[in-house]
Length: 166
Image 1 (spheres, rainbow, N blue to C red):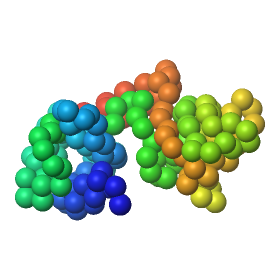
Image 2 (cartoon, rainbow, N blue to C red):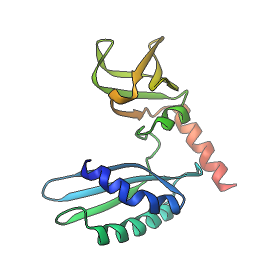
Image 3 (cartoon, helix red, strand yellow):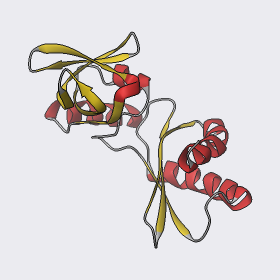
């Protein structure tokens, strides 16, 4: 298990108890390490600055006790943002109909990079409409994926933010 997977396992129960989900944990930098935690509210509302602060306090307390990272590091807690990474199978269903860029570990149909409209997950594969053709990308082969910033995605995000205010 990688260090970031270990950290995700350490913090997930506390973040979950606060009403959030871990989206991604990354550790970058050699001389100055930065631990980035992406989280979002489980209820689907837009993540606010106060939410980041709440998650940061909880994560800091756990990391101070468990001390999984040797040496100094900075902690950053953020929302996934509008053009967010897609890290869990449910993300592909949640953002069905939106455009995404996906890279695979190994070539699928002779390619490793795909761009298309998300059609959801079926049979352990992400289905996308890429240039008019349906492509099935095995979840186990996805190296990284993220939403593409489009007018439709911005409109959906703004509608969700407006719903949060009401």
